[in-house]
Length: 157
Image 1 (tube, rainbow, N blue to C red):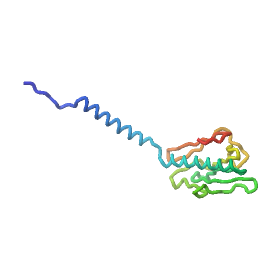
Image 2 (cartoon, rainbow, N blue to C red):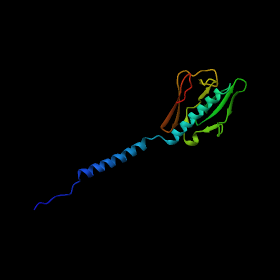
Image 3 (tube, rainbow, N blue to C red):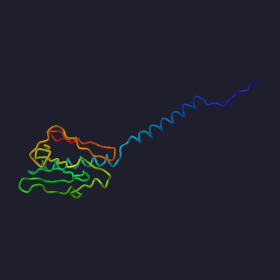
Image 4 (cartoon, rainbow, N blue to C red):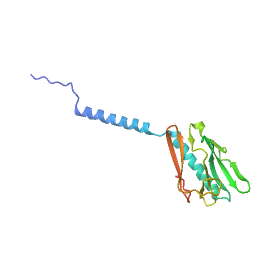
């Protein structure tokens, strides 16, 4: 009479456990590497605001742009012409100032980006063309997202 010892695992049981562990690990690692959703969303909002400023400039004789405050905690939309200078205007459906600090975010401090009637980017209210591509950084703690404004064309990506 022979006695069988059935105290081990079968190959199918081991493979099944490994597959389940792989799926769970992929999900956990993917979630851990995901950037803060508020940061990614606000980056897209900032890109829309830059495109709005560029569009307004292209449809008028004034320069439009975005200026950040000295701490990078907020930014606002402005219109500039030689007769009146720079005047803050409101974003559609929003106020003139976007407070990033309320969201726990910040951007580069003391940034001025403006566009002329051809959509060409400037590094101030008017007069100084942007040389080379320009990168804006939006940050939340150690995470950051970048926006690039292309020289001459003003393409925002």
